Length: 227
Image 1 (cartoon, rainbow, N blue to C red):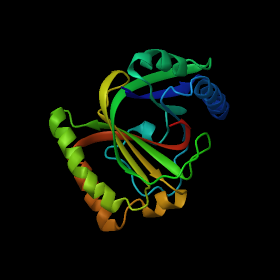
Image 2: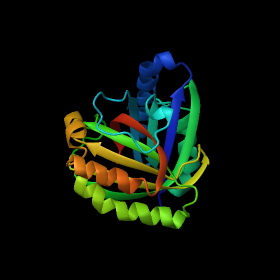
Image 3: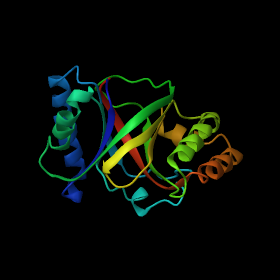
Image 4: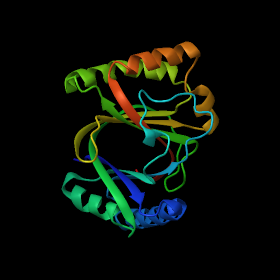
């Protein structure tokens, strides 16, 4: 049985972000080719926040505006191979300065995304790392997020994929409760069709305020290296 993990990585020299990303993607491709049956492997290269983004997360932290990471990796290896796979992906190039790892339970709510393995996925991918209200029991936070799903599917009309990741182990990363993934087939879809209307935006922001205390957002280019 496979488990899913997120690895958040940053290079030691912030001025070499593009070089770090290119080097990491090249190394991850080699890992994917060497272990073709190793389970899902996705490399997300963190981009600058696009101009005109139609929202800010609830109580956004500073790093939501100025991303603190260069690469966010998703991997779903067989359970017995998880630790070696994580170690390999966390150290496949030499100048990694920050590594945070989360084990998650993945729930795919929508998937109409058209991708070609190995190539950059179309459009833009939004990854939100979420922290729930501290006075909210985990069961209540999860129930609130479950209830949110139909609203999100109705109002986020531009997305073609929506995945929720409930964090089950954050011991190797900063505190967080969940990771949301929303894919949009084009940048314009994200900028102009993130919400169906102003009223829809108000509904979404009101609903998530009930369970999300704060969040950090990352806009990424996605490369699916293994499915």
